[in-house]
Length: 182
Image (cartoon, rainbow, N blue to C red; front, side, top):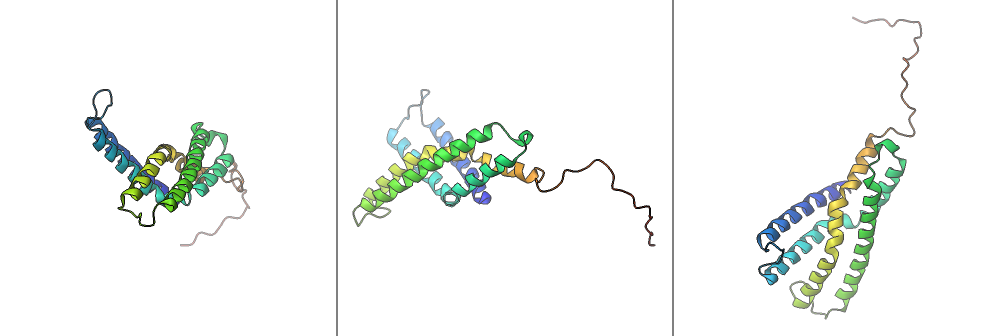
């Protein structure tokens, strides 16, 4: 699941970088788009691409957060970044909102006419609205999802609570010298 999260983080950053480049080029100094329709279509493409990138993470996202929370609680204080608690909270709230939006999308999709399929205006407009509503939550995952990986890395490098701490004393000598084989 961490591999999928890593892929999402890379993809969402590429999507955001492309969006920022587009936005810089197609807005005036006050941030107003030169062509609102084209700008809106491009924002819709950003939203859909980010949602598609998150699809591989969605099913395991709750598990990722639960694992990170457990790992964080077991880390020694010196290994914890202060921002991690807050970042996990942001990720949890974003995921909860995404769950609500997903349920809303399923209800919306089920209420569409029987002939509404991808490529059909009614379907595509409803899906675009769903993606637009979800984008800020997905952006939160793209921004703060690194915390899950950072916590995991810290947990892998932390001493195990099951292993005894290393001692500074040398191992006791038995008084027997071992034979050296030639």
